[in-house]
Amino acid sequence: MAKDRRGKKPSSRQVNLAEKAGAKPSAAKTDGKTRKKGKKRIGKIVAIVVLCLIVVAALVFLIVVGKYVWDTLNDDESDVPEVDLTLFDSTPEAVQDKVAYYLVGVMGADSESKTELLSLVCWDKVENTLDILQVPQDAYLGETGQWDVRYLGNVWNNPKPLDWCETCRRRVQEDEIADSKHTVCGTAITQKAGSAAEQLIDVFNDQYGVPVDDFFLIPQEGFVKLVNLLGGVDVDLEESMTVGDITYEAGVQPLDGEAALAYITNRESGVSGDIDRLVRQRKVYSAILQRLFRSSREELEEDVLGALQQGSTPIRSNSDYEDMINILLGSEEDGTPGMNQVPMSSIRIWVMPGEAATSGGQTFFSVHKSELVTLLNENFLPYTDKVTEETLQITELANSGTADTH
Image (cartoon, rainbow, N blue to C red; front, side, top):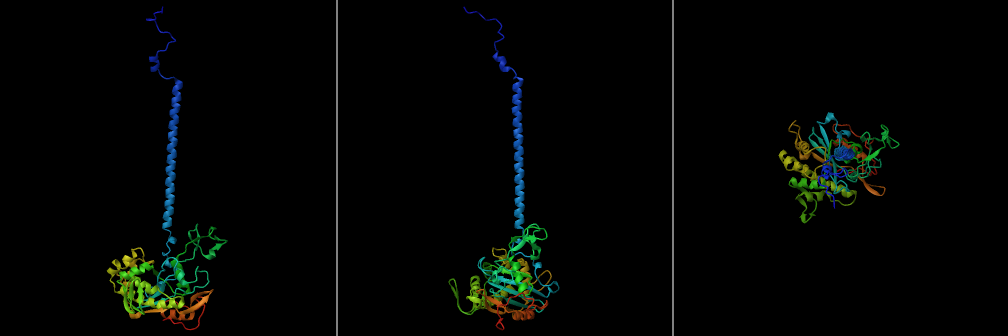
């Protein structure tokens, strides 16, 4: 028979499951869990530190990149038309109240095209006259190395790269270079895009010996807009002309912007065609000036120059449209007169003296030094130093006689 074990004490080898379930863990097991929790805390700390470093690195990267972009956008050399005219031969301060000089032109159809029109305007404020010198786009610049091109009309769209020092952050002159390094700091010379306006003004300063106070170059689309904003121009056509589906008969005709542009840009081949075009351009010059001079300040501010300069094809210049209006109509602040006070009978337009000539298999317009010196001294330099043939940096390819300056 089986023994009755009821009422007897359990054996020491027996395990009380209830007690075991409520018992505390041993020290060894407790230490193991603590170590695991410690490792998890350290892992979290490491992860947070790494994340912080990543955030800091990202912020530093954004700051560096942002500064680079800001410096690039605000780098004066990146904006070709913006130039410091104090670097050029401008009107001496002593006679600025007597005379002013402006470079005026129309740009090519695209970035590869020559400028279509370039003229120097001399405003004699004392005699109340305007003298305008038209320069053929085929004018020869020579082989001096000062420009990367030989035709005047190619200067604007093909500025010669500048020698540049990244350490000094400035343009380096030829006498500061030795072994392709800047003698001031030893930095290797790099190339930076040149200023189209600067190099174009250099032609008039160095080749023709005249100062330039500001420049006004207008894109062709801007020219069309300007004429249309003025309500068109009246031009005496030598012969009939068809633009699009409109035919303009010979005689005085009102031209819109497209027709006016076609009239001044249409040319036959060769230097003679360039000269003939200059004669047509002066008619449009006169018509535009008449419209501008007859406009009120409010009209120019709101409907003409203000609208043009705030659009997509503004006139390239160092002046804003308010400065342009002051030149045309005078300044209300100081009471100085404007160009509109010049009678149309006191506006004279001249063509650069010269003739066609060939060099290296290409045909150029060769400027006549002696005739140019006479023209400049008599009509364009009333209060500044006169020029001589020796001071003009012109390479004369040919001179068969007295040139017709029209």
